[in-house]
Structures are given as C-alpha cells and as structure tokens.
Image 1 (cartoon, rainbow, N blue to C red):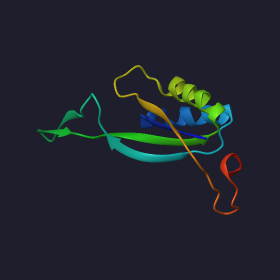
Image 2: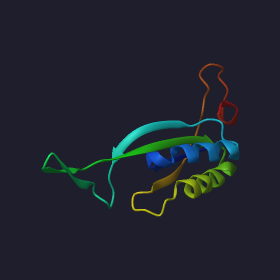
Image 3: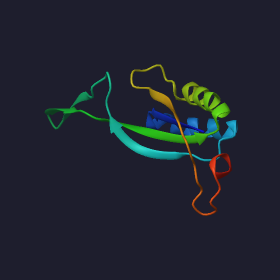
Length: 112
C-alpha cells in the first residue's frame, strides 16, 4: 500500500478531483492547509498599510492506493495540478504498512 500526498493550489482541486475519479480513485482526504516554500509568501497593501502574508493557502490531498496504482495517481495529479507558476505544489509517496477498515475489520486493499 502507498499513501500519495499532494499539496496543490486550491484553484486546481476540482480538476484534479475529477481526473482522479476518472482514473478510478474513489476515495481521498482533502485538508485546507497553509505554508510556504521557495516563494516565502508575498506582500500586500491593505488600506495604505503594507503587510506580509507569510503563509499561502493550499490544499492537501491524501490518497491511499495499492502499490501498482501509485505512479498513475501521481501522474494524474501532476498533469492536472500544473499551472506553470511558482507554487504549483509537491507530490510525495509514502509506504503504508497496514490499513484497517474500522467498521468491518477488513485489511489492506480490502479496506481501501
């Protein structure tokens, strides 16, 4: 099992979600997050006062899948989340040892 985690811009979430559903992914967890990387936030002016926004709003997707599905999931996310702008996000894959569906006790692939 693998956990595919992606941090993307909120504006691409709908396109990524639709593409993942068409790819056969039926479940994912979405979390609104904020942070920064190389872009280090940005400066804005509000009522004449300049202030720095250190953290940029993003969306985190988490998708649990079988080992052989992970690369395809990554490709779908990267293809549909890419805008070509700084701050498009990151995707990483983490190995998962066990998955248990609480309601039924099913394990691993059957629990997804």
